[in-house]
Image (cartoon, rainbow, N blue to C red; front, side, top):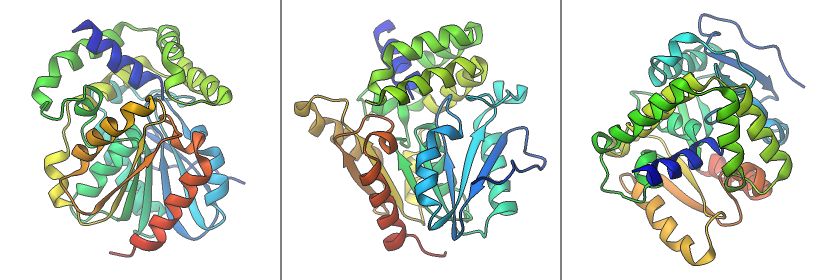
Length: 298
């Protein structure tokens, strides 16, 4: 049990602008907007803020209207106490309202890790106001992937998720940053990126992170993939695995997305978890090609 929890902890915690928007959901989301064209929302992962997308946004804003989102309690964003008790539903509501208020209703969602999971949730929702999703090493059921057990159920994942939730309720930001630093090399090969990951963890709210982890670990979206009506590009990072293990890793990614023929799976074998940092040129090319070929008005 302890060894499995250690693996999960290592995987999880080692991940020209317009003014921030203001509306009733500004306690949960903040946004920086740049460029013009089709709307694109960039959603960061656990304990990350919009800084993880800075270089990506600079490149993509030449052809898209890019919205760099940040979520309360992650990175440099002040925490919002209700997210310590319930995370996914209010964050989803905030993103949905943001889409209504600040986009044309035909946006592209690009989400990293937890952000990719949120992208899947938007994609399986009824009549989503989005045209497609790019999931950057975020999957429909995190627990099955990290344990390499595709038969795992959400109910079976609950005991370990509850232990992690309890641990994060007592954790300090300094402890969370120290745990992040121990496994940060699995997330990116870039020294500057590793430093940013630890810095964002140091300023994040552990209680918000713990609640997000619990819901991520105990939500299995795989059965809902049959409801997909928009295309999804699933990016898989295998660069942290030895070469002889990458084929097996891809098998587990394939099992995550086998429920829909609208999902395209692409391997990034030179990238760790932060694909957009480790293989930036390929990331941009794959993203823009997918949008041009598959993302159209619904």
